[in-house]
Image (cartoon, rainbow, N blue to C red; front, side, top):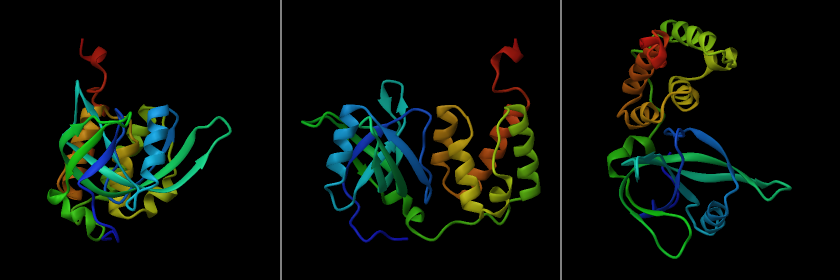
Length: 208
């Protein structure tokens, strides 16, 4: 869905390792550091109410993140804020900027990700039986649980993007999933990562 506001040239950045926001997905976050509480306060004063979720990459930041609009927030008794972000579009980070604010801002470009502003993607080549078979084995091996009924009812994009955000992959793997050009590309990578983990590839001790 095309937003009713102009996409900004600059966004407040929230660097968070191991956390990505996928197109048209939602992400709950707890905000408690003073600088990010200030970021949230400043963001809520804007028309777009958008925050750029991005992963650190060594001493720098990843080149691609995803902008999310604050659609809900509540304050806890301890002053922490619980917010919900709805993805608007991925962006390419042109430059991270330090200024008077205690948090980073980024000069960003959205032009490469027009598909994020369109209708939800489908994946005609997805074989759900195969994906769910892999997923059940992965969940059992990692002692994880999920709402299987909801997962089976989810459409292609919700299913793939939710798994890409939630499964405990490395930060670099999550970044690769975020950067996948199409839903089909992301699903193929997701299946590959699950298969690799099932072979023990996620545990270096097994290779010694």
